[in-house]
Length: 573
Image (cartoon, rainbow, N blue to C red; front, side, top):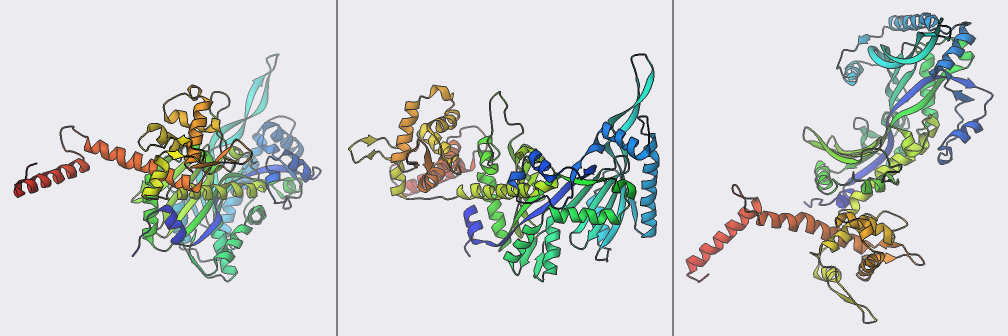
C-alpha cells in the first residue's frame, strides 16, 4: 500500500469528494422600524459591500431603521404607540408581563417542555437529549430559560439648571431572563431562536447551513450519508453543491418570518402594522469546506505535515496571503488584531487555528473521515462589509476564498525535489552567454538562505514583487534594518536569483515573479537547511553532561561499532 506523504498528495489523490457550504450562523434579530418611503437605493448608497454582492434586496419591502436600539427611538415609541408624554420605562412593564405570559401559555397549550438552564450547563447537550426523543417533522422541541447579561433601558433621575428632578431614559446593561425556542424546521432542521424578555426584545437566531443542505438533498432525492453537519458520502456531489450555493438571505429571512408568526411575539399586531418589525444582521458566520477522504490514514498524514510545516501561517506576512488583505505595520494606523497560529488537541485529534483580526480559520480531521476547513467571521467590518443579512453573498465570497487560499498555501509548501543537476543549478556559479560570471547561491550562506525564505512569501501575489518588497522581507531575516541595505545590493541579489532560474522579470515592468522551479527549489533547500542540517548538527555537537540527544547516541554507537570492527580485524586506526 502506498501512503500519502505530502499535503499536495492528500488533496490530489485521496479526496473522494468535497462540499462547500455555509455552516453555523449566529444572527442578531433586532426590532426596527420599517419606513416604506425610503427606497432601497438609499441602502445601496450606505452599504459598504452592496457592489460586492450580486443579491438584490428583494425580500424586504422597505428600509429598516433601528430606532428602538437607542433612547430617543424608545421615547418615540412611548410617545407614538403608548401616548406617554414623559420619559419613563415604567409603561414597558405590562408589555414584558404580557410577553412572558404568552410564552407560558404557548408552552402549556402545545405541551412543550420548559427547561431552566443551570449555570455552566451546555445548552447543545440539552438540545441533543430532547431532540433524540422528538418524532415530529417540524415543531418546537423545548423552551429554555436562562438569565443572561444584555443591553437594556432604564429610567434615571436627572436635575435641570434649577435643581428640579426629571426622568430620563438611558441605555445600560442588566441580567434578565431570556427564552430559548429550540425548534425543528422542515427546511432547516434544528435551530433556535432566543428572545430577551425586556425591551426592545432583541433576539438571536442560530442555524446551520449544512443541516439545510441535508434537508434539501433529501427532498431532491439525492442519496447521501450524513456526517453530523456534513456529508460522508453522496450520490451526486455536483447537484449537492448546487443546493449549497442556493442558501442565501432570502431563505434565512423566510425562516425567521415563518417562526415569528408561530412563536409568541412581544409586539402586538397593531405595533407590527405600524412598522415595528424585526430585521437581521450577521453576528457570526462560518463557511466550511468539507473534503471527504478515502481513509482515515490520509487525514492523519495531512495533519502531521500541516503541523510540522505551517506553524508560521499566523505571521502577518503569511496570514495576509490567506485572507488576501494588506496588513499595515508601523505607528500610523497599523492593522489591529493578534495574528497567530495555534494547534489545539481534543483527546488525540489536533486542530489548526489561524487568527486574523476577529476572524479565525479552523482546520481539523472530522470524525476520522473528512478534512474540514472552516472560516469564521466574527466582525464583518474587518473586511469592509456591512452587517445586514443582505451582505451574506459578499461574506460567502470572503469565507470560501480564505478556505481555498489556506489549502493553496499548504499545498505549495510541500513539493520536495532532488537531484545533483538541480542542486548544482542553484548553488554553482553561472557563466552567461556574454561571458559574465554570476556567483552561485551557496547553500550554507546565511544570505542565500534568507533570500530563498524571502521569495517564498511572494508566491501567491498575482502582481509579483519589487526590489523594495524583497528588501523589506530580507532585512529582518538578516537581523538588519531595511535602510542599511542599498538598492544596488538588492539588484545584485535579484540578478543572481534571476540567472539561476528562481525568479523571472515581468516584461515591461520592474516587478518579478517566483518561477515554479524556484518555488520547489527554495522550499526544499530552506527546509533541509533549517530543519535537518542545523538540527542534526546541533545534536551531533551536543556536549552537555547527561543523556545525549538521539542522533548523538546513534553516532556514538556507530563509531563504537566501527572501532570494535577495526580492533577485531587487527587494523591500525
